[in-house]
Amino acid sequence: MSHSSIYGLTYEQLQSWLMEHGEKRFRAEQVWNWLYKKRIDRFEDMNNVNQSTIDLLKENFVLHTMAEEIRQESKDGTIKFLFKLADGNVIETVLMRFNYGLSVCVTTQVGCNIGCSFCASGLLRKSRDLNSGEIVEQIMNVQKHMDERGEEERVSHIVVMGIGEPLDNYKNLMDFLYIVNDDGGLNIGARHITVSTSGLAHKMYEFADDPIQVNLAISLHAPNNELRTQIMKINRAFPIEKLMKAVDYYLEKKNRRITYEYIMLHDVNDHKKEALELAKLIRNHRHLAYVNLIPYNTVDEHIDYQRSSSENIQAFYETLKAEGIQCGVRWENGADIDAACGQLRSKQIKKTKAV
Image (cartoon, rainbow, N blue to C red):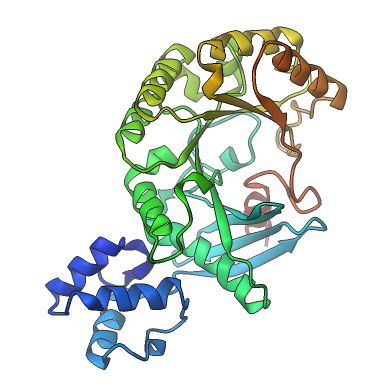
């Protein structure tokens, strides 16, 4: 645990670690408060903590494991950050502004192995998982950026939809969720946190069994195996039948609504036929289903895919509604700043290699 990010510890882990090193139980609450409420940048700033404890923390942990490399700001208030990690890898984090508050989209892996054929995140293969501290630190960096700008708003929502497959980094994901949800720290409500998966069915069972009540989104993108396998390699390992069986288990355990992400690709998955198939697929649990129709952000490397027309998106939406399916259209944030997830990272790595 030498010189790892202190943000990687849950409250219980921090308390246990301090007590194992001869500290009193109450020290954990003090340190936690300084980290997440006062959001210090140096251990020395914890002015009600004794020097020996500060020295102990400095000997074993760090507060900063990444640095801001690039920041892009959109006309709509979206901010995309490119952070450089201690090992030289780079990741993306995005701040989005909505009428209900500030939402941050976090990354969980360096690269992605899921291999969706339309996605910018998968242009570069996964090199490693992020540890829980690196995931938490994305939230802390964004919040500190807001603090420095003098904006009193706090991050109120989190979507785990950045680069990588969250359920493929399960333990670090779960530690992250418990850290940001802790009511003595950032206190981001579980119902304000959404984890997105491409459909790792075996991990969905484990996720369903965990008591935390965060939201689940599934990147579905096609209503049948032939089409889904064509655009998402993961469907070979976890075809729709396996995925929907895991969905049934999740709903039985949680009784919570699932969001189905459906990216609208011109003349690929945007016909009335697919809309009817999708409605049939989720009809049995439509009271706990919501379909999020996502206009595609084009990616230079995936020239075969284009955004569906607004007429096709509207027709798809109306077909679902007529079939009794709750749905909506998610118009993108940050269209003027490399809106597609992974796009900024991919461009920067290419630029670096070209130099």
